[in-house]
Amino acid sequence: MTADIVSDYLTSPLPRRRSVAVDVGGVLVGGDAPVVVQSMTNTDTADIDATVAQVAALHRAGSELVRITVDRDESAAAVPHIRDRLARLNIDVPLIGDFHYIGHKLLADHPACAEALAKYRINPGNVGFREKKDVQFGSIVETAIRYNKPVRIGVNWGSLDQELLTRLMDENQANGFPLTAQQVMREAIVQSALISAQMAEEIGLGRDRIILSAKVSQVQDLISVYAELAKRSNHSLHLGLTEAGMGSKGIVASSAAMGILLQQGIGDTIRISLTPEPGGDRTREVQVAQELLQTMGFRQFVPVVAACPGCGRTTSTVFQELAHKIQEDIRRNMPIWREQYPGVEELQVAVMGCIVNGPGESKHANIGISLPGTGETPAAPVFVDGKKVATLRGPRIAEEFEQMLATYIENRYGMPKVQPEQVPA
Ligand code: SF4
Image (cartoon, rainbow, N blue to C red; front, side):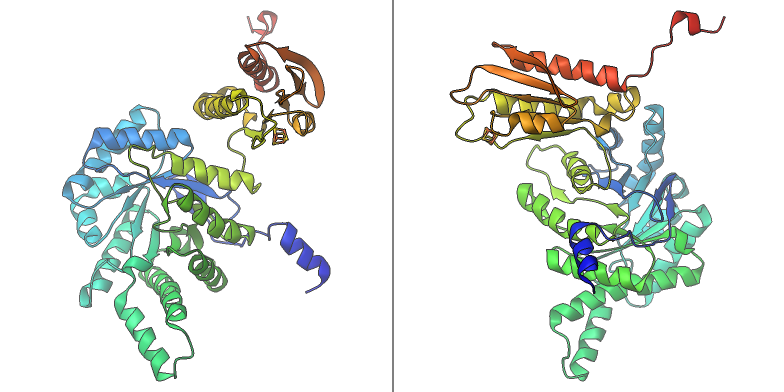
């Protein structure tokens, strides 16, 4: 490896791994498509009202695919109604059915569910046991072929195929333990996904109908397993750290693992599996997924607000409150802005706490404000496209800056107004 290649590897993402694109209800996953953000509901799918509301919220937050649990007859029966209710709300988001243990039966007994879903998720570790395993797996794959739907073969180490793991452990022992137990477990996860994919293809499901995932809960295991899957196949890959946990722990662990894989060009769709705080907002997982892709420079979803951390030079809470409020306003308005202001997701805003880095950072943003720090004149210069355009003073600095931001967005990203004389007679 030459020094140039080493430096490129360290400073730029590697080219995206070539995978076979899969069409999931009109959303392409893999191939040349951008990395897709997806999420999962935590409502009882049989509760149609609650599930429709949560799918709608996840989609409005930016989820491009939404997975729902299909665990029993009542859930399967609810699926077509959920799809129809969403359509009436003009929410066109592909729904993915998450099946465990009895997916073959639910799909066979509820053809309207099989038709309404855009993709089926199968877990090879619990699709069936012993002699029933292959038959039930085959039945789901045949349903997918009949309805022209893709599947995700989603291995999870918590429900790993125990027969496969035992066989690989025995082989490792017979060979004098060349691999550690952890290495055997990683190999079993990879093999479970690849063997199942091969079986599905032998039954007749095209590779352009198969997405693979292999979720584990430890960062190093995840990186290792996906690096191996990426090397041994060209299937489209769904990335996710399972049981990532709550709050900052879940966010950091998911971002660390997936950030490294994405930097290596691995991954076609991501889900951040955060445990919500009690009463917390389920859409947080969508926000984190978007922020991961956006901060790494792979996609643009929402305007970026650069804010300094604040320090002993920050005079008051005005600075934190303004940065927080602008960030929240942007998130809240994005579903409308996306339609009204094409390109607004590229906007960069800076909210800075004092003169040290404030003017410099603000000049780099499209619009930025440098609030006065301790001992500074109580004035806040505002910069637009690198030039100082105003100095705000007094108790209404925050409101005035918000108004300037709104005007900037309207002028820069608003659709040109049709002049009366341009309207055809
Ligand atoms: S810009 Fe000023 S207030 Fe913000 S962290 Fe730097 S020195 Fe502190």
